[in-house]
Length: 128
Image (cartoon, rainbow, N blue to C red; front, side, top):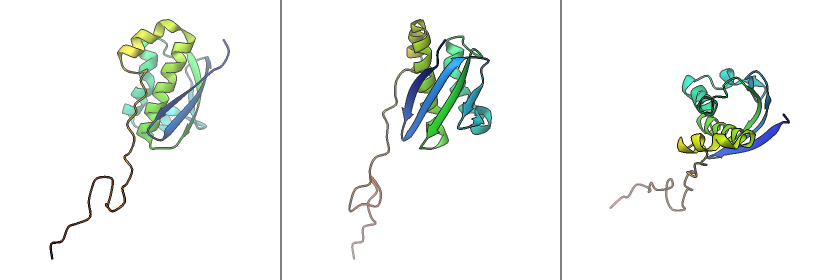
């Protein structure tokens, strides 16, 4: 099997992955993913596509993560893994799509408007 590369995005995070057959080793920015994502909930999010498609421990991943916070990065990585698993085997798509893993989350931070403190919050009003 050749190396499969895909991309996943969430908020301002971008995850580029390179997947090949192996023993299940996931390297994120030069570190093991359990060290990079110390919170167990985020680790479970990353493992979710593999568990749904019964591919746990079959692929090695080399991941480049840029931008955002760790939660957005974990979701970007989850999308990239799901896309790669569909490239490997198209039969994985219905299970991943049913769990909502094939959809890019479009929610972004709303921009700050001029004349206001934040995106929606106004400056304090003073009558006198």
